[in-house]
Image 1 (cartoon, helix red, strand yellow):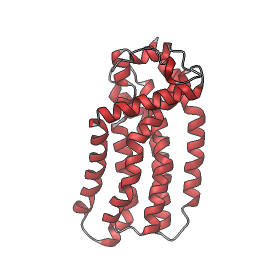
Image 2 (image 1 turned 30 degrees about the vertical axis):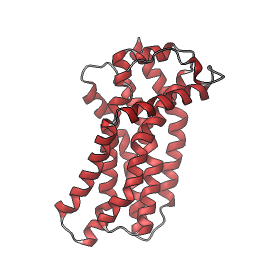
Image 3 (image 1 turned 180 degrees about the vertical axis):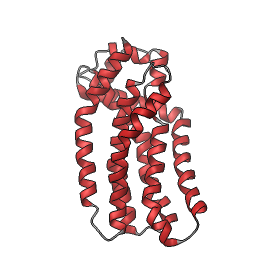
Image 4 (image 1 turned 120 degrees about the vertical axis):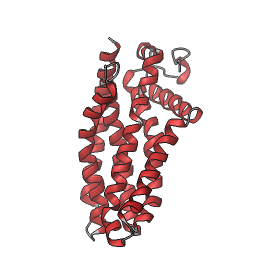
Length: 238
């Protein structure tokens, strides 16, 4: 979908980071609302796959409680991965991304806005739905809370990492395979500590160490990955 014009009217200060963030965030959210198919696919995949595991492994409560956090996290990770190609691909294909790079809005601003909109459209629904899916595994209230907190912190990291990998794969032949090779290994630490938080809580331990590590990772990702996304987009545009 084309960007009709350089988004000068997005803010009284069109050259600021906040103006670029606000314009891109609002634009991508509107596109998600107008074309909800991708978001619904991600949510449906997450719900269906997480719901099929109890049917496949049986109804033994102790087994379900033991595997529940890990299964839900793996499903959330794969669902988030499904949504990554659409973050930049459509804008790249129709020329909108080139217009955005030439606009007066700073690239870090609108790139960060696209990442934030991606998380709101995909990561936030997964986080909200996780406690409901956790009930199928017999998880306690404390474990469900730890699971939701871990997803709330971890899924933005997945969006940030995925944005950098998606930008690197733009225009590459076999981009889907390249994206999988780049993104999935980087997602593993987030999966380990995210699932570990809920598993620790279920075992009677504190989830705080795992959540703290996820929080530190989120801070580092917010600081370091948007510039990397911008550099990768510039390379794809050349």
